[in-house]
Image 1 (cartoon, rainbow, N blue to C red):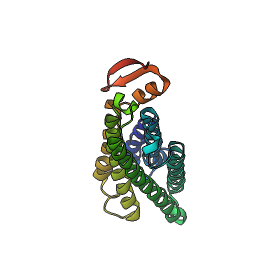
Image 2 (tube, rainbow, N blue to C red):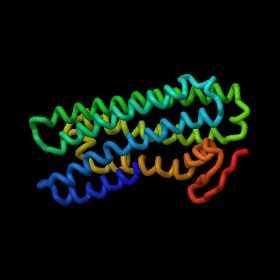
Image 3 (spheres, rainbow, N blue to C red):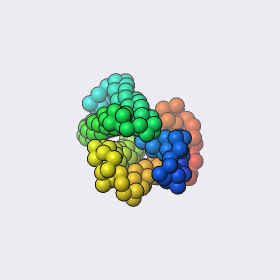
Image 4 (cartoon, rainbow, N blue to C red):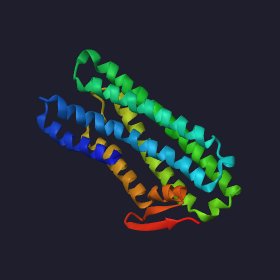
Length: 231
C-alpha cells in the first residue's frame, strides 16, 4: 500500500511539472502530500515487525522495551509524524503565501518526530539483537530472526536518510538548493524508497506472521511461496 501511495505521488509529480508555473490544485496537492507521508505508512509495518520478532523468538525478557509497549510507543510516534506531515502538506498545497511558513514548520515538526523515533527504533533493535545473541532462546534457534532484523536495519536506515534529506529540504525553505534541484528528490526519496521495497520484497514479513499463526503461506526471496506448518 505504502509503495502504491509513493508511486501515485510521483506519477502526479510528472503531471504537475508539465503544468508549471500554472499549477492546478489536485495534481500539485497529490504530488506534494503522498510522497511525503508514504514512509510513515511503511514505518508502522516495520515497528510492528520488531514486536512480532520478539514474540516469535519468545525473547521479551531481553527486549529493552516490553513488546506491548514497544508497538504502542513507536506506532504513536508514527501516527503523530504522519498527521503533522499530512496537515503541513495540505496547508502548503493551498499555495497561499500567508500560510506557507505555518505549513512548512508543521512538516518540519513531523519530520523531526519521524527521525527521532526511527533513531530510537534502531537503538532498540540493536540492543535486542545483542542481548538475544548473547542469551538465545530455544525458539530463536528455530527461526532466522537475524535475517529479518537485518532487513529492518536496512529499511530503517534508508528511511532515516530519506527523512533527514526531507528535513534539510524544508529547513532550507522554498529557494533552497535541494528543493530547486529535482534530481535530489529522485535520488534521496524515490530511489531510497524503492530500495526499501526491494529489501522487504526479498525478506518478506509474511514469514513472521505465518509463524505467529502456526501455519500459513510465506514469501521467500521475493518470488517463492512456501507453506509453513509449525508443530
